Image (tube, rainbow, N blue to C red; front, side):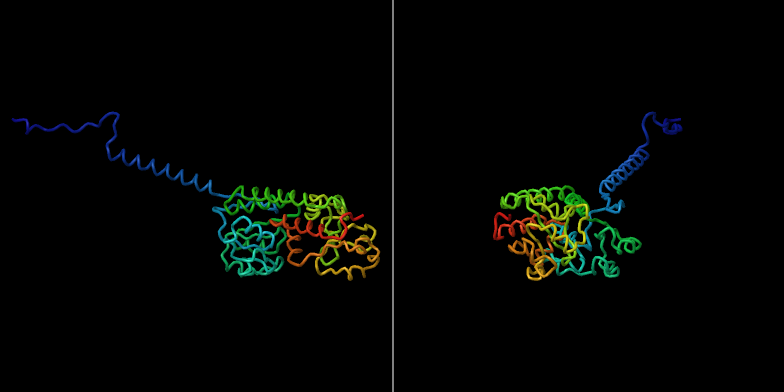
Length: 318
């Protein structure tokens, strides 16, 4: 019998070494598991978590790319943070920057058109906390971020929240530092004779005023001016003509709609020193709008106030 006719022994499994095919399958499986884990980690890292002024936590899986804004100040904030190209809809009152005027309008702050908003397919809607649009939009699965700025600190927070929503964390804080520096620069231009003088800032066509506790009042304080309306009355309290007469402020600040002759016709106002000496700052409509909006043009509002003070006839108002 030759060797070729002898039966061959069955192959024995090797010790400490897997068959090649089995090893490859296990390596592939492990690699897929690791890839899945890495992908999940990246997805988690990309999630943007925001808390709005309702105390609601909002999660965005990616930075907002299609934004509808239902407040002019929020529209301005988006644009100031170099995200104007992400706006797809605005409220009817937004008018700055000029580029937003060509965007679809979806109503006003309190009467937003839900159907028009949905048709724009936004991945984020910016509105104020008490907006009636929030609930129906959320029921339709649209992300809503409710923000409101009543003070300078609020403005700072809102700017950074919007920056994070657009995928640019830190940009809001950087913009605020720029505004803060602008307020300091504006204060340096206030005439010495006006430092500490009392201002009455009229709003809502004369039926109310900006008090010490309003964001406008904070701007006046940053400029070294005093406010004739105490903060204890609320940010924008309704005022009687008699209160202003008794307060006898050093200067009146009003919309251009408020003519001095018309103000002098109010009961007792003709006797006020600010009326008699022509110490009235009257702001054109566009300028007054920016002063009434708690947004990224805060430094421009301060500049407008300082420019008026410098134009008044008496450097020393007393």
